[in-house]
Image (cartoon, rainbow, N blue to C red):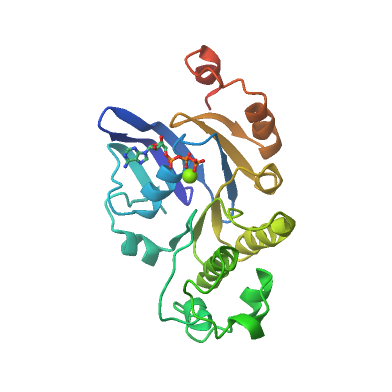
Length: 240
Ligand SMILES: Nc1ncnc2c1ncn2[C@@H]1O[C@H](COP(=O)(O)OP(=O)(O)OP(=O)(O)O)[C@@H](O)[C@H]1O
Ligand SMILES: [Mg+2]
């Protein structure tokens, strides 16, 4: 049994089919990269797995440890160990970085988690998680918080967004640290270097998986733009 099994998931808003008969499985401690052009439904899939407000499937099931969770509330899914790093990082006014990182495991030493995301603990532990932090600093703190939570499934939606180009290895370290800590990872990214660290990858096109397998193979298929005209049989033929 896979840790996460998404079966024939659909999400429709009005007449727009944002996810359409979407199927995906992720094993424990597997890193699965999701590739795809803008607006193909990757973040929507993440919101449906995490259980965000207003995101209820219009068809299909989401199983976590064999249990149907798609009717569970976001905090119930969080209790089961599903956590998400947002495309745009959130702010928590009135809480220090040290407190934020120790929200779940209170006796945890937060310093190593900051070091892992390239932030000096002496400079950041006492800072507040508010607008005085730069966008990239907030994003790094959010990534550190995911590590500190030690989730069973971590969903990263564009973990490199807002992070400078030179720091790609900080992101890769975070993903690898999750895997080493036995977390499964759903990794949504537009960066090939990041996708290539995954164990498996899928390409999403118009709400469906059109290519699945080794990250290098999926990235090559994606870059070949065979999917640019999805009305043709190319996508349909290549579905897993
Ligand atoms: N609640 C909603 N109502 C109407 N349209 C929506 C809703 N949520 C998502 N969409 C549309 O669904 C499509 C998929 O959006 P989504 O955010 O999942 O894309 P994405 O693959 O994450 O794209 P990006 O790479 O740009 O982040 C988009 O066209 C978006 O406008
Ligand atoms: Mg997105």
